[in-house]
Image: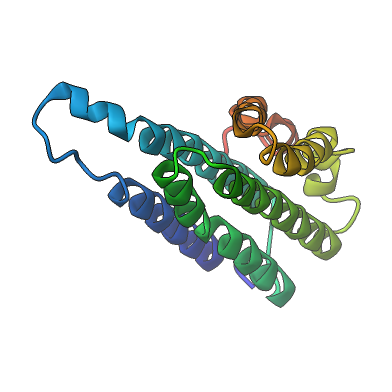
Length: 194
């Protein structure tokens, strides 16, 4: 089965997720610049979520560049990832609306954790389809950064009930570690491919 439709569908869903997030940013009713202060929590959540969704889009693109074909299990693993990513606008809006209160920050962490878990399931599904000698298998290696991210999310969720700002800082640190696209795949895939 060709991977083209899966990639196109995923790109469309991710574009819609970003669109929904930006539509949640409501302009202030007052014409004064000081009215923008009220939007700072909303905008901060939007920026963080935009970066996370962008990271998933970029790494998804890189990963599927190393894939030759997909099967039904990959389609469902991809849908699982898109489901969790689609919850990002909801938890982002909730955090902004409550000025990063404990429950919304914890819920945001749960969605981030499930995004990461779903991405790992998609990786495993692709690896089982392509085998241990595939370019994809050679690119992934031990996945240390993935496991560190999962542990950080697991820590950030309960920390949100003590100090939500620390959880937010952990989310930012994780995003910063992933902001550069996954170079492991670029090293394995033939040069000149996009």
